[in-house]
Length: 217
Image (tube, rainbow, N blue to C red; front, side, top):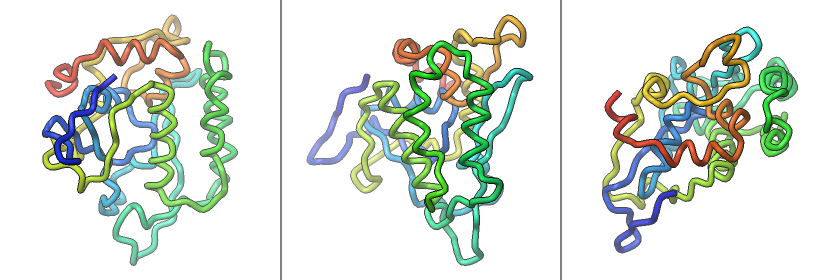
């Protein structure tokens, strides 16, 4: 979608700095796909109130459902990249079940779900690493070729670290959802909702978006 624009190995100012988020709203990838290059902040300080890094929102048969990956924080851990995912509640078993209940009847669930199953594992991993692994899969599915570089390779970037991606999603066009007839269109959902409902057409949806729509919310 986006072309690379570099100078002396560094990205030119058409770059964006994004937070590490687990399956964030569609607006997150609208910003990324429109940028010349991007960096994901892996040095974010731990903040208990910042749930977006390990929580995402989907829609099941009853409406909005928030799924959370539990974390195990220790007092000496000051950054999210030091915080590990907890085994509490055997989330790696319950989360795939929740996704299948929500999207099992969508046209593309079976086509994509196996790509995500490897994320649902009791293997010890940090919160940041889980976000980065999930992000890589999503970018592959959405054909986002925006280079994601280390922060030190970007001279100047527009920061989205405190941006409200859920609110920004209100300004994006609606798309087809499997339960729209019974529940109406539900916005502010994880990018997984777009992928499972639209499949390959999710790429076309992103191509049609303008970052002005996202930024002016």
